[in-house]
Length: 568
Image (cartoon, rainbow, N blue to C red; front, side, top):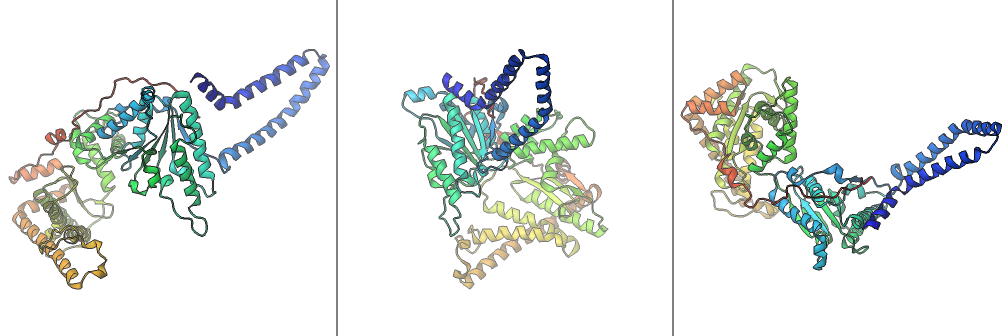
């Protein structure tokens, strides 16, 4: 391994070494030779050389610039891949917050890389490939860096789009160059990791060539990747390929996902309630955040948010605090950051008194129906300030991580969407254009219940959207549409009855919105409490415990890792 490192050092630095030696010889020999000359001759030679020096420098710069542009700017085989050094990365498993199951799978890969000698003695081989699949911003790249850091192996990073070119053969050449360099590092340090982000660009299912040769370049690039991952070129080099993608793995070529290439797949999911709380606390440590901030409440408010989105919330809250000339980020700043990102920037429009009043009752209707009827949603804010293309908004989030909704929950969402329409009809005997988006949401869910989920009252069961419309009888389509309309009318009837019963609370919320323009969670809870409505506590205690991983990830406190030279 020592001589492998020497060869690697020479392959990477032979050009500077040759230049230094050449310059040294070019300076020392002339000085030694001129020391024996007469003074007049020596002055003449020095004068001539000094006069020609600018022209020589100009020629050299032109020649070097031409070579640089050929290699890095316009050359067909130019490959601008990023090469990340362990000393530059320094990402530990402790820095990857959340995704305990994915970290447990990744830690097994680390152990295989660190114990490769033992694995080799028993006749085994390390993984050839590891595929990470998950939504954007969930930490796939960070987890790959943590694997390389903890295992103490070099880390080469690139993206799938780096291999796509118009010229046939360029992509395959780049794949060969990348793996050739990875094998050199693997021989010097025992193993090497290649990380390919957005691998679906490179690994899509191969296509048949069309009349103009389309698909030939992509196919040849993928074929070269398949050959390299098989280890046909050098079976002794321990090169692990980690691919990351946001799309479903079905888009990848089956030859790429078979065992022997991508041996293991890790699914990176959105963080649950407890993990979101840990992520908030992790990023809050790097900022000046008020110690009184309830991180559990923030985690509840940021449901279905990725770690990248949570980090962006913290950054946005810091900007809000700095804009207000405050040095500490408060809960109000964090809430404002979430609302700014989700709802958009608030703009106060010039509206007539009647418009403001109808908007206030519209949002109050949404608020009351959601609060009293929906079993899964918490109302965090109500506002009659224009955001985006809406005059007002009621901001709510699910109380729990629900991945499959039952008929009661879906019907409650329909009633919540129709609350604004029912409130307008109750108070003004008419409605406004603001109900269009509400109708769209309600009709979509009612259509889904009847046409796809078999939740209608007629007893029809099946997913009728899978059948072409021309194959369905007119009577059946009429019956399904009537059933959809019946659900909507039933929801409007129940919502109207509820708002008529709670008209005093409706008037109170409308008046408060006209007065304050915005109501937060605590203010909403206080008003309901005045009228004897029980407070709906946020699910931050027992629920968080139930979401905890039963088997904590065993990560050493200070794992050893070798320091590598910069991979320039």
